[in-house]
Length: 195
Image (cartoon, rainbow, N blue to C red):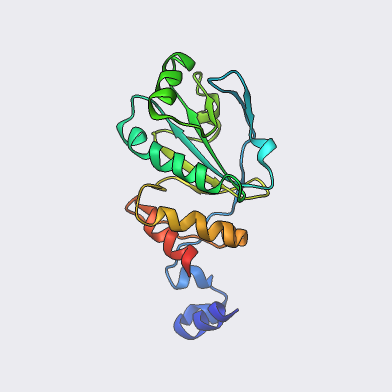
């Protein structure tokens, strides 16, 4: 309401029915989307289902063993998993390696990973989420709505503060987030969540 009042004062066209967001040249956040459900095998012959994680905030990362940035952020994601798995955050890594478990198992062993890893060698889940590059990360709220969907860099300095705030107040995922046009949205997201 305060924004509309401010828009009416600052933007002359608003009084005539013009959209206040457009009148102020603001970016209108896209509405939250339902996160596509999936079921994937794991390297240790179990199954990961997104639907089983309802009620938790999900940090969903698409990655590959051959991807250097993916390799760099994996230790941070493992720490995230270990620090918050009992506090309502589920970290799930989806490998898009076409060779599947044959390359993922040695990678998991080498890095000592315990976070849940799904195998998507046919890239069906990757396609449902519209992932064109790895790493790509999505945040999904406790009700299964997808909010942040590209450019989130967990290994940035802001990353560790983001999930802390999400766990303190899960309604923050309902807050409109304006994305940084330059692709490093972690700072912008962090600032939005830390307000």
